Image (cartoon, rainbow, N blue to C red; front, side, top):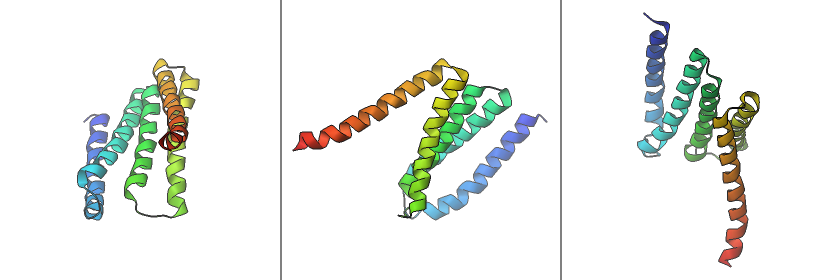
Length: 140
């Protein structure tokens, strides 16, 4: 049997083993389709990272790892009902790492795709900050 096939079978088995307790834990608090979407984003990022690692594609590894951290931050933000400082710290750290990975990957590889992602993310952040300051003044 091929090494990649063995890896994929074990990967999906681990996903099934992980998702059952998570589903039982959060079944009461949130709609399953909501948190499953966040978990799927994280798992797609992980599988993209592993696929890039096995094929040697650095851009795929960078995008996959950024998706993993973004999905983890999104999951913490939406579904963990806790006001502890460590949770908020992890949310911010995962978000910053996700953005930092893409920017660092662009500077290391010089890839056009990562450059466009960097510009798009920078434009979104700039727009959100501008609107967050202008909208309260416009509503007065």
